[in-house]
Length: 115
Length: 115
DNA sequence: TGAATATATGAACAACTGTTCATATATTAA
DNA sequence: TTAATATATGAACAGTTGTTCATATATTCA
Image 1 (cartoon, chains in turn orange, yellow, brown, cyan):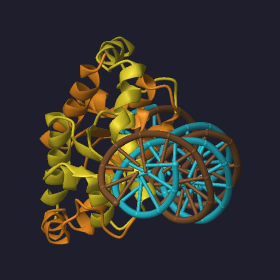
Image 2: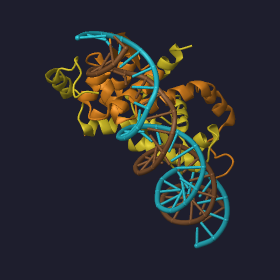
Image 3: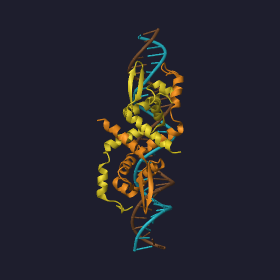
Image 4: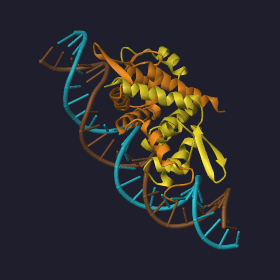
């Protein structure tokens, strides 16, 4: 490749780049998508979408160890995709907000659209 | 952990599980989120969101090799997150549909909300 | 108190990912 | 044709991730 192809207008590219969020934001977005990229964590969200649940309920529903569920929940929690409430000896998790519901919904619609 | 904690109602869990999309769909969703999880690919989408662009324009805008851009675009293309059009010797890429725009928008709003 | 239950976390290892390098293919123009 | 430009792709390597295992912490109840 050359330095610049015929189509490139450095000035125009400059303008477009200004509208790309800065690195900090991009990093956080990719962390969020990263969290949504695991089968186990996605299934957790599909369950929590219906009803808040404690760790052992999730453990029963999914077929992974308690440790795996707990690690998964931590990842989701750290990105504020799920939130926590203590309830006696149980720790109840629930979907954080509407953005999270929409993210899942949009992605589901996207993949269901094809075939 | 025990086999079942006090909160667990196997019958209820069964019902909740029926509303979790099947493995095939979950796999495709996690592939989509996986594709959205890279800085480079996210930046590509933020650029394409403003205007369709050819590979060398993207290469100029981002600071990575042509190969990296091309690999990234392939990933996005395979999941139908971007689409392609030939234009003479150029290959023009553009955002596939509104789902993709919404996915990015929801995630951006989510991360901008915090601090 | 102590035992049982519920959850969290660090370590470790296999599996996966993104980038670059080298090279191949495709298109245009001379 | 040939040269130049534009894009795609396979290989390979460093870095990252998800799981399990072992163990620690927290809460309840006897």
